[in-house]
Amino acid sequence: MSVTTPDQVQPTPRKRGSSGRAYSPDLSRELRQVAPWDFPLLAAVVLLMGLGAVMVYSATINESTQLVGDGAAKLKTHLMHLSVAIGLLVGFTFFDYKKIRPFVYPGLLGVVGLLVVVIIAGVEAGNARRWIALPGFNVQPAEVAKLGFVIFLAHSIAKKAGRIRQFTVAFVPHFMVCSVLILLALFQPDFGTSVILVILMFTMLFVAGTRVSFIVLFVFVGGFLAFQAIASNDMRLGRLLATLDPWGHRDGRGFQMVASQIAIGSGGVSGQGIGYGGQTLTGFLPEGETDFILSVVGEQLGAIGMILVAGAFMVIVYRGMRIAARTEDAFGRFLAFGITLLLGLQAVINMLVAVALIPTKGLTLPFVSYGGSSMLVNAIAIGILLNISRSHGIATVRAYAPAPEPRAKKSRKSSGPRRQQAAPTGLLARLRWPRRKKKQTLEEVLE
Image (cartoon, rainbow, N blue to C red; front, side, top):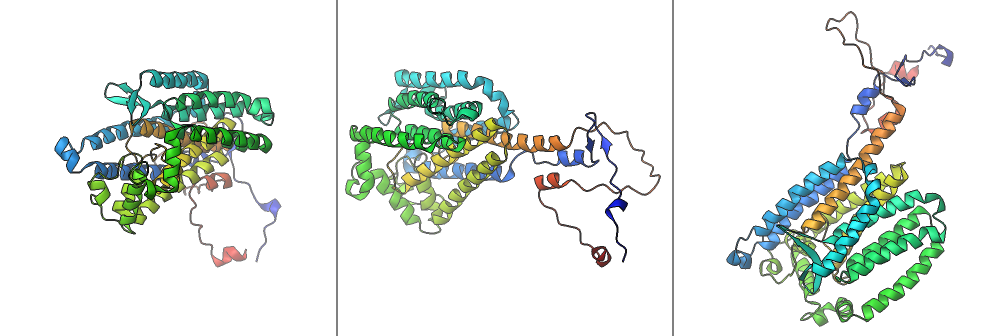
């Protein structure tokens, strides 16, 4: 058995690109095979969108809607929102997220302007003024404000990363912006958006590395202010009491939660089937296509359907956190984390409301509920997240694989045996799906 010493090993010949760095002949092929998007993340979003369209139609097609007019009217509107959302998702997937940074502060001013307009001239529905009526479409500025605030936080934290442990740097500017948005949201009133904005700010600052003592101080102060806001408002206090005992308030503020619990409980494990369900068909479940879409899923698809929805959101959160952890750019890292946190928070809050564990917040279930503003904003958020993943993968490959010089065209006539291509480098192999290793012969193992 012959033994080959390291001095006898001949290195694989490598060409050089325009930058002078050596590269393997196969690196350009590897670069083309890098996935342009995160497929599991995209698959989870598409699954939720498809299931949402079916559930919206099933929640709105009943005797009352058919007698009044077109029973599929909301489905048609939802499909129109869905088609525009898919276009935005694809567009932002290929739009460089770094080009957003110059528009952070103008966009934030635009969000504040929209929140002021909705207070002055918004459409009122359900004792709240949250929509701006446009021809054929209603805009909900609170949805835009949440994504705009995430982008602002990512930009500001990335710019001040070296001084984030200082109180005046970490909290003063971010708290001022958050306070303005919360104040405008409470005028609508929209308490759910206010809670999400606070959680986004503190969580992103914590991840950025600010002092925990500052966060604890603000949590105590914020908790006291939240208690005062609930205790001083009859509507919020009534919702809290109804959550503690929904069946005791089933004829009043606990009506929605009781109907939701009945719908989920009657679905059992496998559900009553799509298009069936006493609470949905009779209209006893209010806002079944928006805030309580998960209750419709539970009634018609049972616990299996609810687990499927929860599992899809778990995939979104896991892949989003993975993208954030792998991104080297500070702005992209905080932006990916903030978007993932925003989508996960909205999903968790909506699910907890559906099972009557927290008071109703008026938040939709991302990608599933009926609602144009929510669907479009969430699609833009996923597009940005996919672009961060795509940019990171291609940038990593390019760092190790400079662009090769154009190769001369090969003659069709073969002048000899085909040259065996070199194996890809270890880094590039890790960026791709794992391949099966070639089985070695006994002689190769022994050598």
